[in-house]
Length: 223
Ligand SMILES: [Mg+2]
Image 1 (tube, rainbow, N blue to C red):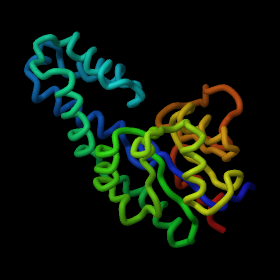
Image 2 (tube, rainbow, N blue to C red):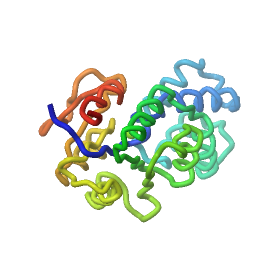
Image 3 (cartoon, rainbow, N blue to C red):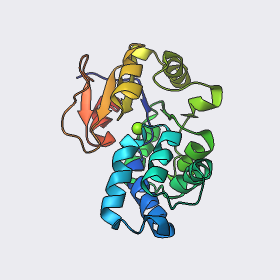
């Protein structure tokens, strides 16, 4: 059984449910915008969820689609994007089962941290809402230094923060490209968070682990 010296986590849909927060954001968006009410709520939410691609999208394009579908929306795309950054973060809730695992890592003295893509202010606010600030030894938001996953430099920096070597630092994330391929590019072992999907379909090399919850990794991290 492999044993890792350290671990680095993606945040959204790895240690918090971004998907649940996004649904709550959409419900609120629908409620507060009469221009959408010609479409029943479920089909409207389904459409906006589909365009979201699990958060992996350009926000100008995203809100362009929303405006094209519901031309009665009065806010400009820029205003909708600005509101989105603030409102999505406010819908984040702590994942108590994840935070318990992260606390166990701290108790065992396992070096760990978080690396999250996305807009700095929103991502930092999410870490507060999720209760991660008092837990996490480090939280990197690479957009703050003009970079993002899957850039190798981001993973190198994260490994440096742990004080371990890449080959013994596990990276855990839900995105096959930005998380898994990025970490593999500097020789890190990887765990793919399925987040509701059944099978890895990201090609080879496959991640070393496929998990439904980060607790499954504890045997590889704590003696
Ligand atoms: Mg993610």
